[in-house]
Image 1 (cartoon, rainbow, N blue to C red):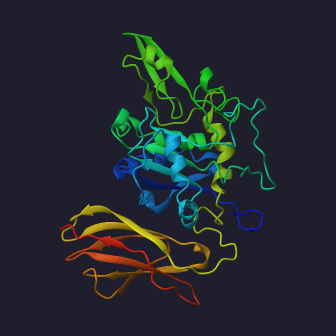
Image 2: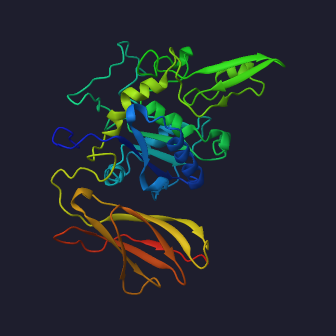
Length: 368
């Protein structure tokens, strides 16, 4: 288990958010939602959001999962490399994007720490440690799932805010003050705002902030289209102030995986240089510019703190001896292929030694 008390590092000031693709998830929808989160994050208490891998989600090779969001998440967290994916990317939060959710909800967040959803009648508590932070949710309240399918229009541009909505829940933000949602918040004011004023043709306003529920009864009954327009902001009113909530919890979440300042590698905890594993990738674009096909590759490092950089090796055409390509200091890299398919493997380095090439590989297919 990761221990914060044994690490003497400065506090981080960025929440590192990692996107993961499973079950036919749409990468373009995922990228757009992650970008929306980064673009509309309020920099609460001076804490920003940093998208891991420049906002390119990492693909997990797995069977297509079916079910409601919580059923799918139950399966995902049982994957053997679930924890190492997060740790090797020093991610504070993980957003799972799936194309196989059979539910009317386009997302769900797992929040066991800052909520009374389990029926506990005691007040919600923000339990600060010696650094003024509450990191009790670091190991069980760091992930959410988002649907990217056409079912319930979850891939529509109107739903581009869903990832930001779920991240808000992970930081203790709540829906509106509707009775059925009263337990799902941190503080009394941790609620979204909904404004519906319908006196056509003179006044017609129907808006809601990011964490408001998707089918708010006031919007269904009073908005001309039966739904409110989502404004790209977390609520700021006195009695419904999710931004104030985020300002309280953001620095705690930014230090779920403490790196020593605004992002970077994960804590080593005394581990040794290890051979990269689970090399994977996905197609980014074919032939812009001609004659190159762009792929994005990524891998797992069980001890990123022991690695100073990684060497990318490739076999082209596939089956030929591996030759050294280039180096990178992070566990992902773009790769451009032309003329023939190329198989990619990775080796980890530090100032004293290097590892063998990874046993796993990624085949970058030439698409021109």
